[in-house]
Picture 1 (cartoon, helix red, strand yellow):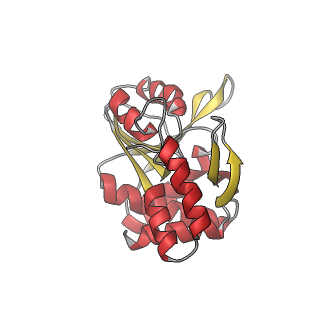
Picture 2: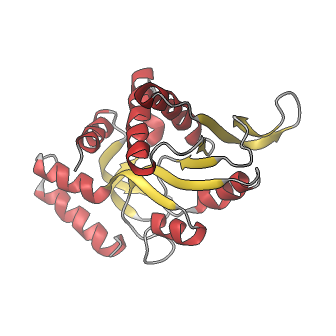
Amino acid sequence: MEAYKKEFVDFMLESKVLRFGDFTLKSGRKSPFFMNAGLYITGSQLSRLGEFYAKAIHNTYGDDFDVLFGPAYKGIPISVATTIAYSRLYNKEIRYCSNRKEIKDHGDTGILLGSPIKDGDRVVIIEDVTTSGASMEETVPIVKAQGDIEIVGLMVSLNRCEKGKSDKGALDEIKELYGFETNAIVSMDEIIDYLVEKNVIDDELKTRLDAYYAEYGIK
């Protein structure tokens, strides 16, 4: 696993964004782990988060894109932090764009925040985590409605490596449905292997994680 991925796992634990225990997810699943990107709340945390996203996007998609689109609400600070980091790390100016949940009809009108998206733009969508792919049902039509654009791919922070609406993972379902690449900074498989090696995950927790993935994991 690349060094920046290991650093990202340590960062998630330090920030208490990734926790192990007993959690009930929106889906109703009982999970031995939980990730909450809303806990990145300080300037230094957001700065580091943007750097990890920028490195993952650069390694995966290169520099041939124009706009980072972060869906409301959690995608807004992530997209801003990542555009700043991209400029600093790679000396390339990427524009950020997000959507509003409610269309504004005065002043800065419309559904978008940040940069407009125009014909010819290549867009990377950026999110915290995708469990079911439901957010893409709202996001993709908004982006595509802006003109003759290309969605290069999606980058999330964590691939949970579990079934979405079918026996496939949520990221694979999105790729199959919309035709663009889907990637994560790190996968839960990588996290488990790394933390077992570091003795952060003990035998009892590993047994619970194995049982969870036996039921919900992608093959």
